[in-house]
Length: 321
Image (cartoon, rainbow, N blue to C red):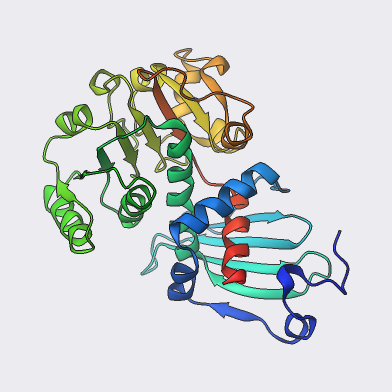
């Protein structure tokens, strides 16, 4: 346990007492370089933290307030998320960081930038341990705000990728995103047919708000790794029952994905899979307490809904920048 005479992260005590640092979106993106962020997340999952189940409050029939706290012996953070469909920006997020020993506020950070980065980096971290070696083609399913960051993170961590396919319900949106990524130097191109793109890819990441399955198990080639990050409610699906049943499943957390993700909850309720299909959590995988991929032909699946542990690890790295 830290004392008030030992401020966290090596910062001078007078700074902690007199100054609250505000980190903009640009500050957060600049601080969270992919290799350093993935390393910080891995250390955070292995070390662990106190992460209560997120609080969801109905502000009105349509509007929601989410509170996501986490803490360890140095820092205490809370991410505050508002979901207001009628607002110009439907989702807004802010991360507040406090000194665990004293409760003093240290920083306020742009929550959207931090969430985009840590979500994509967590998937890239899981893929390091679940994906087959020397994968050449990545498929990104979705064209929304998160999709571009999923592509950036996977390419940054897997330099062997020579092709990035982008599929969306609207081909024009896929073309626009592929062009944006190509301008950044990524080998991106649009995909017109989802089934063809799935069959051609061994690393697939889905970042959509779909409520009906998009990726079908019959399309998955042996050795594929499937990364599902879009669905965060029991009524949301990105992969069908056959895809889930064919996979060795790792969750970001049982408490989150195991109870909130439709890609897991729905097939389990129907008896398509049992608890035995879930080989473990990401923390257990990183600690060597469970085995993800056993054979080259295994199909693996990582399902995440996000955890404040990731926000804690990312916020710590921002403070150290």
